[in-house]
Image 1 (cartoon, helix red, strand yellow):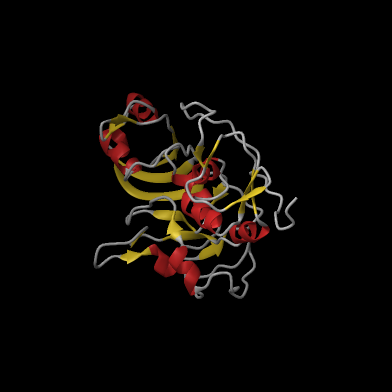
Image 2: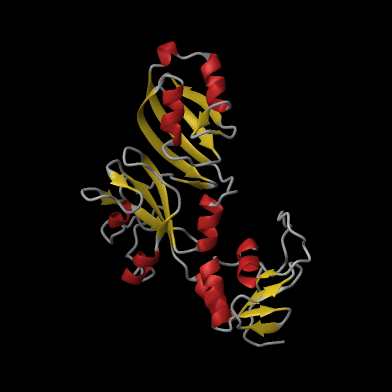
Length: 271
């Protein structure tokens, strides 16, 4: 047994839905991505550095293929790199764009400063060295929130988390509170249409949970993220959106995080 390997909960094959023959060899980096061990780019880096073991043997050849029943482990050094990846939760205000903007627009990542650090839980703490300039360069937004919307926005260095949130088959719930105008002409039939039956960009939307919170506010729970989806859904049934706030992603609630401030995702939190 190699002494530099560390136990990894991802070393057991997951059920696979790939229509290809399960006995057909697959690139190791793809297998690692499928199992949620790391991103494809990270997998190639770890393989090149000799930090990946397949059935107990070190693998250093990029592009090498294995069948899906193999056992994959990361060396302790690579596992530590994964554990050190930073994820940040921001309460994005209106007026900031999620990703790289056109000239004249401010990206939300500019709010990730020491002055805007909200601390952990209810206790204000001094900024720890976990977020340094090099981390900021590696942080990528995981899920859009348009310039006119506010609420929870996640930045992460972790490709596994990004895939879980915005991957093609993600299915992670996103909850929005939406203030609307035009409800005097709104019918139960239109509410049913919001829940299922609308089409955007030529594709039928997945089932959504949509309900009234009060006289002018709806709650949307979606499992997909089309561009400006909530606004376009409302427009399709004659509602005008006056305010939109994302309050939850998966199990992660916005909670009492002040607008414009951010905090780290803690190791005990799940999405």
